Image (cartoon, one colour):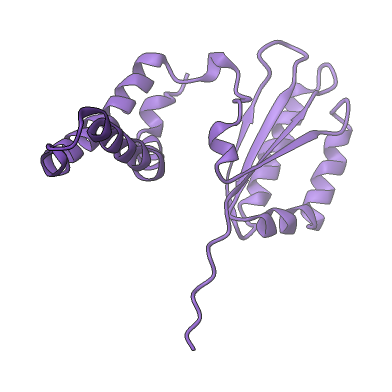
Amino acid sequence: MATSPAAPAAAVTRIASRRTRPGQEAAYEALVREMFEQMRQTPGFRHGQLVPPEQPGGLYHVISQFDSEAALQSWNASPKRADIHARMRAVAEDEPEYRVLTGLEAWFAPAVVPATMHPPRTRMAFVTWLGIFPTAAFFLWFVAPLVAHWPFLLRTALITGLIVATMTWFVAPRLTRWMRGFLNPKR
């Protein structure tokens, strides 16, 4: 009897939020960069990002993504993590608050990135259009003629549903990755 392959584990995004001691911002940021270097050596680590506070004395957010919960737990149990976190305690006011996002929750969770760090709306609109235009054109060209005899609302529901599904699971994740430099130019 053949067995089906196991479903791939869902990616896990962890957001750690914490304040630094006054005057220790540069030391904290250096430790976070060092931590990211160590994380890169951990199997299953995808990427990390440090989001500084909008105002002095505000929260830093450290966003890290792993291939799976098991990869995150492997990092959590590592001596390298224990060492770097012990050194961070000297420059931080308190222990970090963690938030873990998995699967679709990561798509619909409120952003922790300050509004000033989001890409300009015009660039986001342009990249969205770059994805929607060919996706909509494809379905209007190939699917719309097949359902031309359907009632208008049913036809519209099908076409827009196909566009949304294709954008969500295929086009948007790739397009935002490919256009990262355009969306987030170095400031």
